[in-house]
Length: 215
Length: 215
DNA sequence: TTTCTAAACGAACACTGTTCGGTTATGCAA
DNA sequence: TTGCATAACCGAACAGTGTTCGTTTAGAAA
View 1 (cartoon, rainbow over the protein chains, first blue to last red):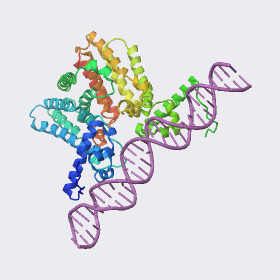
View 2 (tube, rainbow over the protein chains, first blue to last red):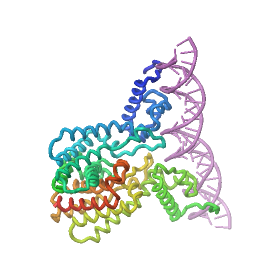
View 3 (tube, helix red, strand yellow):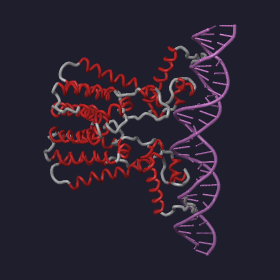
């Protein structure tokens, strides 16, 4: 146990460090127990600080959720951006890569995936910068690719907006379906096999859709 | 205000009536404010009864949610069953009808749709019969149709289980995507147009997938 | 060294879902 | 018709929550 007297974070640097400490510990707890399973008291305890002190750094549990998720979404979106930058040539192939990336991301860390794409933010009347600036870059990236594919004549459909949402819906929907509790395990386990098997199944068909259906 | 003295529901019939009153009022409030926005106290108040009295009829808010949703899922599943029974011939056409039915269902009452397919059940340690018996019949129906289509040679793919989840994922995913708050309105509104427009867009492509891709 | 801002925090507030204990209406047996 | 056991009913209490208040005081700036 650290019995040294508590310091106060007054410099900009120290304050950012404290903020990061809160977000990191919050993320760990949120992933382990879900936002509902974590109280601000328990978070404060883990950080060895008073409950009220948390509120010098974040205005609400909701805003903490957005702050935590900002990092993970940045990781996801940066990965997407890198794929786009390093890719050369055919845009349909790029879309395949993005789909594959999404599947890999879901498989890599299921708890993270569910937190990002399925768990709703806790509610609160207090907003903050992270919620206000919250916006999904992924859909803009996707639109960008679809736009190029249309211009290159690789996709016949001209409605880039609708088609982008449609593609997102397919990839996200087909993956999500086995990560939800919506269908009990009763139905899922005998039907879809392991996640790996199911993922390679849907990847096959997503490729088909991208190649055969849209060209 | 009803100032007549309170009666007690002791007959099986009267108890069922009370239960139904609770479920109906609960449904109204849940749809209007969401499960989180409704307290058991406010529900009791609306029903002109004590808070504790609710618990002679349901063991938890969570179980109330399952009781409420049971009705709506029955409506959805019965509608699906009727379509299946009245349909003759080609199973791909039947799948198209089911997809169309899902879209119509979502369009008909968005609040209901979101409650059923997007809102997670409130959590509680107390379970009850409605939660325990909760199971999604839709996926079994869907599997049934896919099975027949495979047997009739209308679908080449042999893995009925995976394919059924895949199809569900496509329909649910592409519809859900415009009913979530995941993408801010910023991105959605200029891109997908009205719900009607978007729905007819995705229906066109779902038909294509069913006809061109799987046969 | 003094001043003064704001980080830190225990206590309190207003809420929540749920349980407890007592009251008493009510269906049923005598 | 009467007496009785049962369980519907309910106000109060309990254990929790997110958040705010008021106070203390560390520590950067003067």
